[in-house]
Length: 272
Length: 306
Image 1 (cartoon, rainbow over the protein chains, first blue to last red):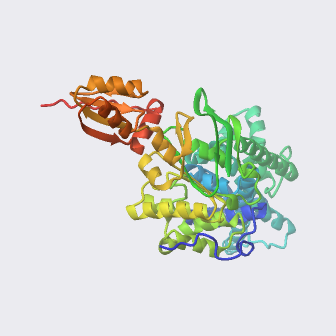
Image 2: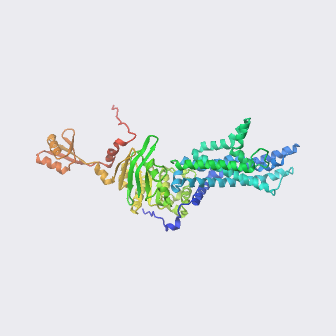
Image 3: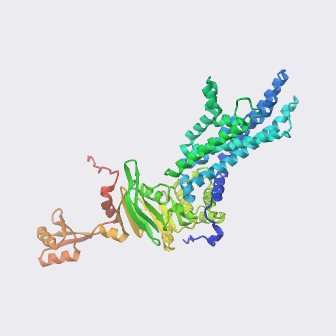
């Protein structure tokens, strides 16, 4: 048996050395080489578009019943499915890390790239990127698909309104930040099921539960949860006393940064 | 070259690696031998910076692993034959690792070729047998054409053909001047592969020597059958040997060569009718070395006898 172990070419021709941008690219290779990524992105988009279309259908019925629909409700329709869509995308972001802990893949990953903060940042960046892309795509797709439905009662509207662009893009920003939170929770908990349940609890169950509790304290806490603060910067209208779009964006960014920093601190110290 | 200095790892009050110091030289195969739970894998993870030592340090060519600019070109490691995502193909698994270093897809195909995985490269790694998983792990270790190669239990799950292949691979890597460090809990495997052995038990180094020395260290004894055994016993003890007496006319003599024993018998006119050198096998030497350091000792099985 003859084996040539040495690389066939001059090293300079086939290897360049470790760098952050290459770690990001590596994480992208990992994401796009798993069938589950496509399934989760597609179902996330489908959930958002589907809910938007159902909502639009509901508006048509209500309009026909002689109950006029408020403009701001129509304008928020493309974002209506976000609370479901975000869960599927967050699951994808969690799996980006928790599956590595679950399978042991984290060891080859950290052997190839020992700088842990860099690896975490790369994962967060890739998750945020796919989140932004998914969110914006789903929002624009929803917008496009509900116009023919709304047109039946002349409720359709044009994208020329510059604020609409902002709102649709904000959906992407929201999902990007939610993905960073999900990646961080994946790092902190390591266990896929536990981390997904925690993310769903934070983004979906907790806000729902708090909104059912009467009293000012619950409402006050609710305002500052990531999902609620985040939905403020996608709101078509800001009611008095609510966080403004900028405040909402800042609060949610603070959540994402806080989670990411905590995850980085823990990840740097932990044995894998 | 891999150098560990006073390396210690504790989990709670359990010391898994206990103040070990060693140097692994390039150009030869160094075996890391010890019973399960002796601290081999923990030591290997500390070399790669995956586990942080409680105290002490370990360096690869003078630096901590993580401080190298192209770690995959310094050390290639196989720690666990199942450490990949089951839904990802073998080629994409390697491509993801390679991408961190800008290693070309051509090199990925090269190591797939080298490890005999080229034909299954596009398949989900989750369907791989343990042996194919080992090969994929080894492919990952070779990606960066590294100066040192660390393999944790590399022959586990391999068929006989694969075992031979790993031995040949380790030999070739060492002959090319690389540092080769491989662990096993099987002495017989190490005996066929390693030039040098580090034996570890309960987190401490029990032996760190060329394999030939470890063999000799087991000591060789000579079984003697002789008439009037007590006379020969007195004679060889006077010459500095240690003696165990057995049944009938048996003596087990340590510390003298057979020729010296025969000489002593001849001088006293004693009739020897058996003289058998008993070279300790590596397995026995290993058991001898680690007897007190096995964490989980099984009870001797006693047959009921019916």
